[in-house]
Length: 506
Image 1: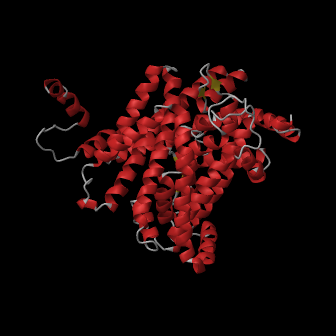
Image 2 (image 1 turned 90 degrees about the vertical axis):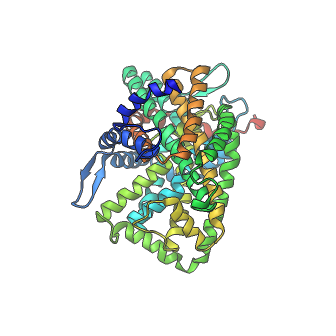
Image 3 (image 1 turned 135 degrees about the vertical axis):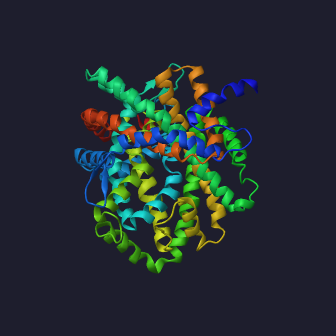
């Protein structure tokens, strides 16, 4: 205790307020938020730098950066995101599998591991807030961003496999850090590659602790407390208990690496998507006569929105931004989960990666949007997205908020375990591939799970969002420079497919 008391002057200076051990006008949450606020605000001004489009709306440069890349890659690869569906599903179901291929997980497991990182709280809470702010028209641009984002995912996932490192143990290290470093080095741009890789890895670690961990557990804890009595809940004010339980579960899964993560996500992801989509279909079916009008509303207000600040540009920005938050096309994190796929043909995993934005944004996010629109639940004053979505489902299925709580916990758990893997690979890229770096990251991650469940750190959550978008700058620069390599590999892959014969027939 005496050692802790010696540290009080340091924390007093940090928080710029005297610390009273007996009582305080500010809670712990408020003190941490206050201390971080200046740093986070400065960071947001840089990353979310905006240009004024009209008097009412400003367009974040990062949104232009992401959406432009999606459009450019769609054109560059001649609409592969529209033409490649059948082949993508053939690869996922194992039609082109070769038994002796290097890697750690199947195509399907790689996809579910990646989906577990993108299909999460954003599909439930984020969509509700986007529609409340931007109206039904935001859904149209969310779908468009998801479809075009499939092309960006194709490039990311192809490069992740092409430039991965397969260690003697069989373990794989891959993702944006590795294709930026190795891919650009192969082009004679080694210094640029290493610089971009480091510029990517640092925010990737920050994002894994903030958006990938604390946001997920915090929202799951809130939903659980709400359905177990709110202020009367046994967990009210004791969220750390739930956080500790989830931390232990998370730790037991991530300690086994990507194989353990993939085994869990290959079971959790399909189950939670089926539960959520089934309930959504039920709610939509209860309002089936209103579906044509809702679809017309989505399309018409996508171009001619009502009562949205900034009009057309405003609703476009909201939709694209929501899609980017959700499927992360251009941010590159999910490519880390695709890197360990068992294949000798990087392009095959590129096809698999394309399905990710389709499932995450075009299917799951759209279903959430329809539920909210059909039940007329969107509210411009909404601040709690999970609760809004819960009410929308509850208007038709009175008991579904309890089921949604389970879904939210599963979404949060699956997102956390996948994001822990993304953060781990960035961490070990910076500090080296060794046991000490590996275990230290996993321990810190589990500690943040407990912290996130017990505090409401809005500044930390904003930090996580800023870190996520900070990654897209170095990542997309690398994608542009390496796109010709992917195009050449795609041509070779199509030639291989044309002459392909199953292993048993060889």
